[in-house]
Image 1: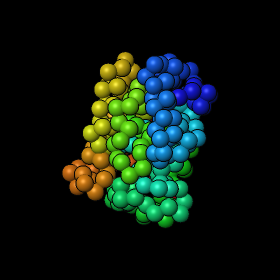
Image 2: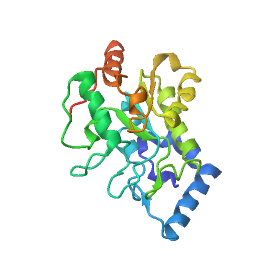
Image 3: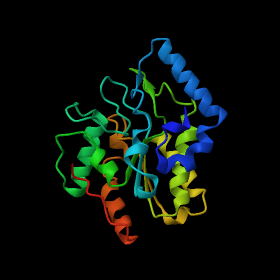
Image 4: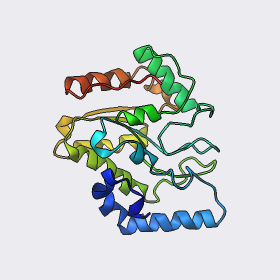
Length: 228
């Protein structure tokens, strides 16, 4: 995992994590997996797309999921997002249901969340790669150190930020926010994952979008236009 893949706005904050032995081991392991014929999503060149789309100094909201979609043609480096023309996965359908219930915004035709990212919504997963058809297959392989560093960089920046943590894996990052000195500047929202397996256990009705905007507006950071 070479640090030259990191966008300039994130480079200083993430270089220590990316230069670690753990990150080098992860990079070598990913290369070996691909050489062994395993298909890994998202494809090379897009695995850090969330960082490219949302510069560190512009982050207003962090939406954190578990790992990328593991179906063909779905993952493109932004958590929960799919490219235009790709069928919306069930988790994304549920996100849009909650968006409509929360803010009255009808379900969009596209599942491409890039407009959110460009407004300052960092669409990050706890683990940034996955083997085709094998959910959770790259958990514990070293991505945590890098995504922990992303969260810590946002917290350390000092700007009031909303952390939306969906699912138990993402919720573990709450300690990274609350355990740092400037945690009082931030809002942490946790709920079950929007997956059909868990959405009815508290994701529906959690109103993350309106809560995020209310907090940002109160902090003088404007709001996010969640319509696509």
